Image (cartoon, rainbow, N blue to C red; front, side, top):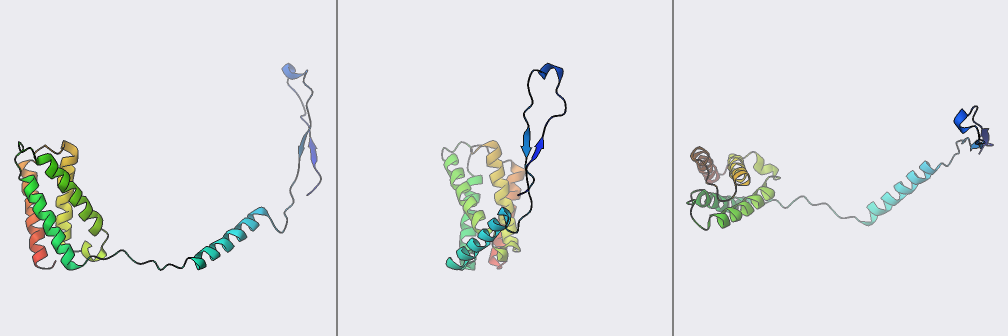
Length: 170
């Protein structure tokens, strides 16, 4: 470390003339071979290597769902969608059915949307689109609001094409 340098103010304002300025000591740093940043970096690299070698856990990919499971669960969600959106608006069980549908559709989407093998399938694409339309409607308008005829027709059409694609293995 080099010798400290004394710094004093050159002038003081008239309103502060009664205050005697105190000198400020400023030290100049000289670079050393072992700075704190280098020591910290070395410590972190050593710690990381110890942690990485002591916790050798193979990272397995997410459990891929089988085709049979995907087909079975997709057909279940299709039947829930059909029964829920065709319910009478005066039915006292409509709110419960919508809550059940939202739960099952959310779990279906969470389970299958990360499966790269399913992303290209037309059944997945149609199901995802229909579930998005149904969920969006019930989120926006509430669980007891009936789905408009045009939207209902489009959702049912997507359900039909998804079901046909499932039967063809697509």
